[in-house]
Length: 132
Picture 1 (cartoon, rainbow, N blue to C red):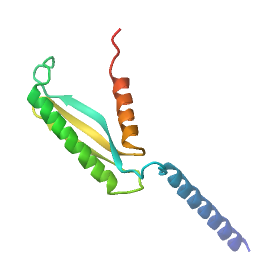
Picture 2 (picture 1 turned 120 degrees about the vertical axis):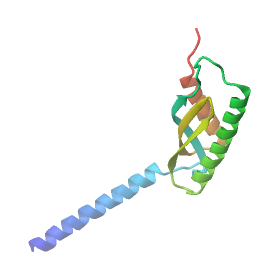
Picture 3 (picture 1 turned 45 degrees about the vertical axis):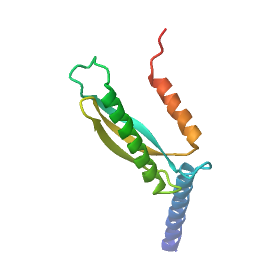
Picture 4 (picture 1 turned 90 degrees about the horizontal axis):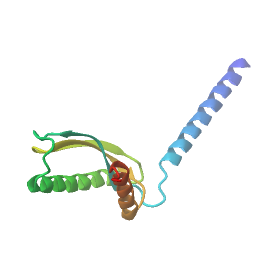
């Protein structure tokens, strides 16, 4: 009599844990706007490669930075679209010769392009010091 009762308790506990885990995953992965089609880039680390750290970025370096940034955003969006409806993330690195090296994370973004733009603007405002 003890074995069937013990087995029943173990099965009930395992089922309850599995149901709670599935509910937690569904809650974390819910996206009611777009099913994770946009990628959000977050810079994790950057390294200054300039020999003179006070020198401004050159036009050539700026163009290369914009080109690599656009290509990386497209690659990030494609990565996110490859897993529709699921939040995913991956990390990338790239370098602008003579200027800087970057290590970034690509994350799924739940929202519209306008929401993503507002998020990016907010992050820039949070990082940029205010001049008084």
